[in-house]
Every structure is written in C-alpha cells, then in structure tokens.
Length: 588
Image (cartoon, rainbow, N blue to C red; front, side, top):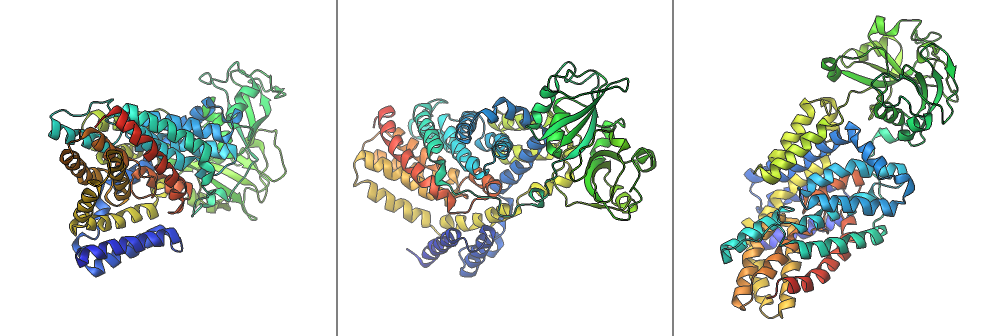
C-alpha cells in the first residue's frame, strides 16, 4: 500500500476513535478530521467543501424541514390518538411504530417514511413520559430493514438489479427481494422490540429553552361555531385530544346563561367555552374540534404575517388592573388576547373580562412586525421563543399532500431524491405550512456540518485507491472459503464499507467483486449480489452511513457510540438469518 492509502485509513481510524470517545461534539471531530486530511494531502483543498453540495446533506436538511411541517400541521395528533398510546405500553408503541415505518419503507423512500413518523414518535414519547431515544433509533433501523423487501425500497436494491441485468441479461424484479427481506424485517423488528433497552436513555445534546418553560394553567376562551365538530358532543369528548392536560372550566351559552361543564354535558352551537391547560393541549382541543379562538377572524392572506407570543406583564405595565375589554385591546393595537396564566388561579370569567395583574403570563396574537414595539409599549416582556401553536394558522392536509407528491415523484417519476425532498421543503415554506421564521430553527446545523465534512474524507478512500486494495484482498480471501463463508464475507465487507462510501457507492464497488468471485468458482451470482445489497442497506453501526440514521441523531440526542450498542447485535442477526435464507431462496 502507498503512503496516501495508509494516511487515509489512519485519519478515518483516528476519527472513529474520537467519535466513540465523545470528548468533543461530532461536528467538531468531523471538521478537525477534514482539516487533517487537507493537511496531509489526501483531500485536495479545492474539494474540501464539496460535501456541502452533496445530495445527502440536501436530503437530510430537507427532511428536517418536511418533518417539522408535518408535525406542525396537527395531523399527527390524529394519528397518535388512532394508535391509542394511553392504552399501550412503550414497548408496544415502539413495535407499532417500527412495523408502520418498515411497511412504508418497502414502497417509498425510507427517509420519507421515517420523516412522516418521527413527529408521531416524539409525541408518543412525550405522552408516555419516556425519552424519544427509545423510539427513534429502532425506527431508523426498521426503515432500513423495510427497504430491503422490494426493489424500490432502497438504492442498493435498484443498483444490484442493474448489475444483474448487465451480467445475465435479466434484472431482479420488484418482489425478488421480498422473501429474504421480509424474514430480516420480521426478525429485526422482534429483536429491536425486545432489546431496545440496550440503548442508554438520551436527551437532546442541546435542548432548547422550550423544555424549560412549562406553563400548565393557561386560560383561553373558544366559541363553538356552525363549522365545529363539537356540536352535539360531550365535554369529555372535547377534552380527550388534550390528553388530560386541559379542561373546560365554564360554559356560557349563546344567550349568556352559564352551564356546569360536567363530563356528560352536551355542547351546543354558539356555546362559549372557558378552557384551562397547557398551551399545546389547548391548541389540540381547539384545532380538533374546529373551535374559534377569537371573534377577530384573520383573513387567509394575512395569516402568514400573524404569530402568537408569550409575554410576562411587567411591574409598570399600563395593562395592570385593566382587562382587554377595558382597553379595547384589538381596536387600539391590533392584538388578540388568546390566553392568560396566573399562578394558583383558575378563571371562570370571560377572557376579555379578566383584570390583568403584574406577573401574569399572556398569549398575544398579532402582526409579526408590530409585536416587538407593542410589547414594549404595554410593558410586557416576551418569553424565550419556543414552539407556540395556539393561535397559529395551519393547514392539516397540505403538508401531507406535498410530501406524498415528492415521494411519488421520486419513486415513480424519475426525480432524484435530493431534488424531490428539496422541492417539498420549499413548498412547505411558501405554502405557509412552516413559517419562514421557523425554518432555520429546525435545521440541525451540527448534523449537517458533520455530514458535509465527512463526505470528502470518505471520498479519499476512492481517490487514493484504497477501495481497490480492499477489494483485491477480499477477493483473494473469499476464494479460500466455502460458499456460505464467502457469502458471509461479502456481506460483512459491504456492512463495514458502507459508513464510509454510502450505500450506493458500496454496491458499485462490491457488486462487481461479488459477481467476479462467483463466476471464478462457477457459482450463480444472484445470492452474492443480494448479499451485497443487504450488507450495503444495513448500516446499523454509525450515524453517518445512511441518512435515516443521521436524521434521528439530533432529535434522539444520540452519541456516535450508541449506534453500535444496538446495531452490532442486530448486524450479527442479519448475517445469521440472511446467509441461510439466501442459499435457500437463491441456490448457488
């Protein structure tokens, strides 16, 4: 081996050691490794930043935006209730999530399936009081396994099919992958459902202040209109979407008469409800029952410029001792008072009649540009910016339609995945599904920087010829093994190389080696090509080999070494199950 090849392997080995050590954050390690590679000359300076334009970075960044828009739509709240998490334990929830992701991944791009289900998993974890890290990595692994079941499930399957066509004149068909892929998926899901506790419980490495601010007793009022689904329903039905975090404290009929909000009290058109609870629970109740928060209806064309903000009423605020009705808040300022919170106080009067006190926390809705000046004028101090959904305009169906169109275009329309997801992210923003001001908050910069820095380092394995050296060594070793041993070696090699070349490049390197080896020994190439596809599609050891693993790293708060804790035994299971299955389904 040449000096540059040794240097390439040395830098990658040191980088992997630093990742596992965990002393420095993963993006710092990746950037340091890139600088070292430039310094020793294995990465040319003019190619050092090529990773920022790589498809993987675009896909992951776009998927984060798409996932945020899906989560914000509120549609996942409906899906969450359909799964009835309150009646199932976390293990059962995990298995359900993995099955859904795996089945979806067989027919659409696995990162798309994962992006759809991440918001559901996050909410399930919150409702079940467990860390999202319990759900997200097993779901990522399930998406990789599910992609093995069909030709379109993952890129390695498509590429291997083309290689087989070049060799035999006949490509693999859509469901040629299903027998082995289904066996691996079932086995893998069972293992993950039983052994998920191999993962340590993690929290986001950089948790936002959103978790630090927890106000549970906001009071708001909402009206049942003719468009509301709550007409004729009971109070308990209305409160169910809030999951016990919000309750109706008063009902005022259309004629001004008050009714006691008993669980079986029937709601009528025109009823005004006083509701108390945590802001996200209030939002779920309002959005699911199609209630009207304010008499001041915002025109659709103005909705994109309207936002809601939490603020504390200051000591010298002119609002103290007055109500929103007293100061004609909307008429004088354009602000809607959506909710009020006061420590150890439950309100039963109408929102506009509550006398404001020093220290009250209020939710105000108004024009994004005017809010800062108005808050200063009224002596209110805004709380730290966090995900505040109450009073924000959202479309539940449009984000799903955009994502479905993108996945359909990538699966059947010949559109590259990067272009499809980038377009989906763009339309999520321009359609108002995700406000522009929130986009960059959802882009996980450390993850994207890590990916962009690692791609040129991985490419150095090819540019220095290191992959050719590895390929020749594998070929010589495989000739000395029995058929099942050679098959296992090819698969293990593909698993080991995938984190550094990405799965498509691994297939392009390994498939010709596997086919040549099979030809030399007089074997049929099918089982060996399938082994390459399975090995390249099963990167369970690192967060960098497949974008699904990368996508869950930030939300799950995982460390680099966490992937091997669960992924290494899963890799052994894949190896043990797939080799005999391949020999059974594809005799050599």
